[in-house]
Amino acid sequence: MAHAAEIKVMASAAFREAYLELAPEFERATGHKVVTIWVPSVQMMSRLKSGETVDLVILSAAALDELITAGIVSQRFDLAKSGVGVAVRAGAPKPDISSGEALKRAVLAAKSIVYSTGPSGIYLAGLFQRMGIADELKPKIKQVQGEPAGAVVARGEAEIGFQQVSELLPVAGIDLLGPLPAEVQQITVFSAGLHVGAKEPDAARALINFFTAPAAIPVIRKKGMEPA
Image (cartoon, rainbow, N blue to C red; front, top):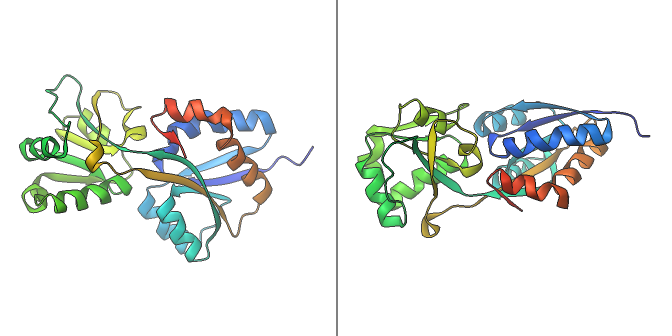
């Protein structure tokens, strides 16, 4: 039996629900212990770039590639892909979001909009720019970090919220209208990367294998993502 390792993971919220189900199974199966630090993507990049060391990093593929270029992460393993979803408060009228045009009308009609500082928020800011409505929407947009956009919608502090579908599903008090219409959807791949300074690289690699094994697929799907 290999020694029981303590694996330190720094992860962003999009993969959280699948992770919370899979990590304990991995611990039971291997005897290793997984210690997780949940950090918004923006903070994660700055913490890792300023020298914080963990064994495993779970982040969007694009951000991980940046860490590989910076020599902080050695390689990337894709875990799951997720689209951006749209939500309103439970019981509130459901605007039509069936097309890009309908979505544009819905956000223009909404009194307030919330999205995160993560990949979905960055994408939406660009999308509203391309739609030519960014300036008009600016005064009613709220950006949140470290809290799900869905929670802000559930409290009635924003009329319409956008976030990875996997991050909207577990939030109580909201109705998920669905994913963005295909023509304006952005699929983000979430990946795991081995930190170059990993103290437990073998155990961390075993955890990656567990997340990418066929047995993990139903869990990933149930949590609103597709296996990568």
